[in-house]
Amino acid sequence: MTAVRQRRPGTRRVPVVLLVPAALGLAFLVLPLAGLLVRTPWASLPERLTAPGVLTALRLSLQAATIATVFCVVLGVPLAWLLARVDFPGRRLVRALVTVPLVLPPVVGGVALLLVFGRRGLVGSWLDDRFGVTFPFTTAGVVLAEAFVAMPFLVIAVEGALRGADTRYEEAAATLGAGRWTTFRRVTLPLVAPGIAAGAVLCWARALGEFGATITFAGNFPGRTRTMPLAVYLALETDLQDAVVLSLVLLTVSVVILVSLRDRWIAAP
Amino acid sequence: MLALSACGTTNTSQPRSGAAGITGNVTVFAAASLNESFTRIGKDFEAANPGTTVTFNFAGSSTLATQINQGAPADLFAAASPATMKTVTDAGNGEGTARTFVKNQLVIAVPEGNPKGITGLADLTRPGVKVALCAEQVPCGAAAKQALDTAGVRLTPVTLEQDVKAALSKAKLGEVDAALVYRTDARAAASDVDGIEFPESAAAVNDYPIVVLKSAPNKAAAQAFLSYVLADRGRAVLTEAGFQAP
Image (cartoon, rainbow over all chains, first blue to last red; front, side, top):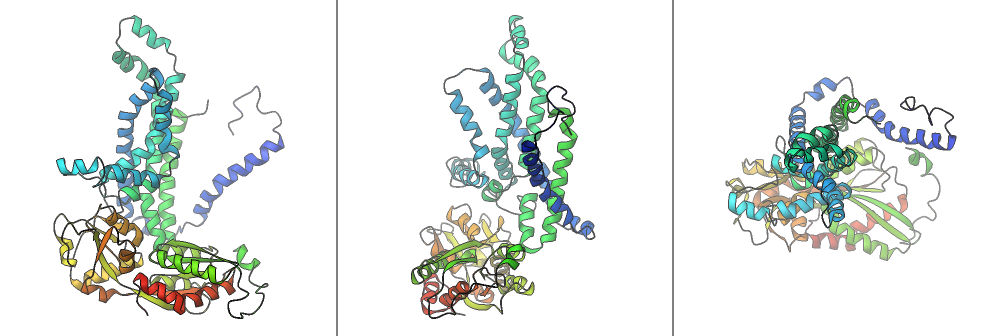
């Protein structure tokens, strides 16, 4: 569908050895989603959607993912800037560390969060003693778990945008007497805004779908920590159809968000 | 569904002559609370029947029931409640009727040393006491609800976990002050938690049914494993783990 735009190497004959696996790959990704649609109990859809708990879980999911994304942007953009613009010893190690949550199974992330931010964790026990603050079983815990898993997406996207941006504008600002902070605020940020937006969307989508770290670290309680993915998993215990309907809601939300933003920010070059 | 029609007809080799003739892999879907004891029984069974391997899938009973009803290739299903078993047998996926092989009862699991001094269900409603329960959809949660109702105790847990081991782990880690789990789970985790018995658990005793599945790829070995669980050796392991005879 998109190959039409490129004139030079595209549109000539596509080799079958590439076309066949590509088509299989596409089918592999799309078929399960189609299966979800086929098995959706359309007749009872309205009443299942309005069942108590569904809206609560959806609202919680949207809220937590959004707060987690804001958290990630506030901390992640400066981190990405540091990685892209400052030459410091151990930069490659730091970059590797940043991407660890990306490849870590989320359940492991949840366990790690428990060991640090849990009530008996390294930081958590201090927070509990000093301020009476605990993260597990709270919505804040959900946000923390989602941010842990989703932040690398943002950092990587923003760092890529920063590296791709023309540094001559920043150099020009500097020669005109702007400090690094002013340059960052007035020149760099506007320059990489599309990259930040793309990273934020990816980050948000990942946070919305977060399951493993959330159920491990934050538990599962309606209205507080039971997000949509957890509700899907619990619905599977009793009613497959309910699980399908909930999955459909999650799928719809993700597709709508991605499609509505794709053309503006994360379109293929 | 393909697997269902593909096997099943041929290859039962010899009729059972003692323990001989049983080979191949047995896939057992078992309730999370059976983890330790079934793992041990599985090892014993493999030793007693060279050439066999036992593979386990431990999870919340309801998850397992859903997987089986969706065509997961299992030989044997052991659930933590008759209601969950019923969803499998009602769907026509059980071979014959399920039989109860053990019973289990709830206790209050508290972090070792019982820092909050909990002695019974009523203590769980004290302010500042965090409690983990199983979700009502899984057997341990249904039993917990029944026990709490019997005791007339209304409590708000901080989390409703997916299976009993998840609830237990929250107590092990000290993230909650108490969790309602099976006696067998508390016993298996005795180094991290103390199990506190409470009288109302008698009102919520869980029967554990077991059945060979209709689509079992290895029916002969599944039958043999079932017999092994019910025989003295299996029963001894289960009793030691804290299960009661049916």
